Image (tube, rainbow, N blue to C red; front, side, top):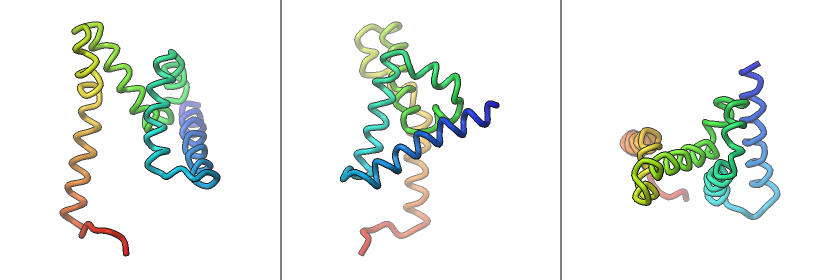
Amino acid sequence: MEYLNAFLCGGILCATGQILIDKTQLTPARILTGYVVAGVLISALGLYQPLADWGGAGATVPLTGFGHALAKGVKKAVGEQGWLGILTGGLSATAGGITMAVTAGVVMALLFKPGDKR
């Protein structure tokens, strides 16, 4: 059942993104940024953790899950460090994902010839 929940949750998030790409003038970059912000806002309302508990990786792997991780990190750091946690919490909570994204980008740039599409 966990696999089905993850598939449904992730599928709904992805299908929503595809509909936004097809039916609106929003660029993919704006949609992706919107997903991160939506994850932060839904987490701030206390609604994302129950979704993550139900949807598992289908909720935590997409960009909304990244926004949720940012919000959780900030909340934890503010509790431990005070207002300084606003600046440090999100980065410390998501450092692994950020490092992997940068590393993958560097490796791909070394393996392939980056440049503008013509």
